[in-house]
Amino acid sequence: MGKLCVKLPPFSPDYSGVCSAIFELNCVAVLHDASGCTGNYTGYDEPRWYGSKSAIFCSGLREIDAILGDDEKLIQKVLKAAESLNPELIVLIGSPVPMVIGTDMVGIAADIESRTGIPCLGFDTTGTKYYSDGIAQTCVALMERFTKTTDHKIQNGVNLLGITPLDFPSIATGDLKALMKENGFELVCSFCDGFSMQAIENAAQASLNLVVSQSGLPPARYMEKHFGIPYLVQIPIGKAAKEDWLSRIRDSLREQTTIIPTAKGGEADTLILGDEILCRSIQLALEADYGITSDCGCLFGVENELEGENILNLSDEQKIEAAINSGKYKRIIGDPMFRMLLQPDTKVEFLDLPSYCISSKMSGMAPISCIGENFQSFFDSHT
Image (cartoon, rainbow, N blue to C red):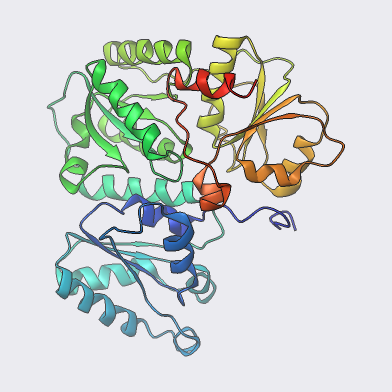
């Protein structure tokens, strides 16, 4: 019963992560489901959907198809879509029913590629994992398939890993990219916001990877192993942390070393809820700019390979509710949906930081950017 949500909406699942990662590519993406999962993604997990031209299809899986395992029906639908749209890539995405009946999405993808000659990727996503897992799988698969090994390196060239609208509203993404440009860093490829097949092919020309969410860690490790590219794990949140981030980029580019900043830790009076990399970055900002010690309440699992203090694995609603109402914290930073878990006798200062992967359009708040000095504006306006 640990995954039961009584008050909170379910967080964005892995199949939505795959769809989000490939959204801007010239791609035919097919969610193999009965239309419910496709509706969840297009209606609630993709802020770019309305007004877009992205080709996200539903296979229209029916009960008889599940009973008979009629993969040819799916294949023929994909072939017709590919013939009509002439994509550079075809992607097949699983959902709970294909998981239960054991559909081989990777095998079907190989069959379609042999018939069409178009690169085709299959993902055995299940809907039981989080969006960050789907994004990470997709980025690694794209790198394995398309990124070219090269001896040519762009001296100040960087890749952004793990940046999607599920974690970063467009205002924050714009601020982050502007900060990089202002300081002379050339963006080679942005996984997965504002990128193309050509950018994916050239990604190994970067001299450093900037990891800005948990979904960026697996592709960063892949690129370090296969292309020798180091990475920095941090978002430039807060005035002092922004300057530290810029300094660490220069150090990592010069020394070609991976850097994972950590806070000092200690007794905390503030709880941050969200993606672990976001939480760690806000933790660094609070420590540097305000002298505040905080706990990271990681909602999508904890990266065991990352060192650090005050890291909590709050992987279900019961754990989140217990932490919020523990009486330990005087301040909580997180999506406004978590207010529903506050008990009447819990006295805390709640700082609303909406996250699309948690509350979608239901937060009722305008997007917020915490990049650089914007964090001071956000924090000071609440305190």
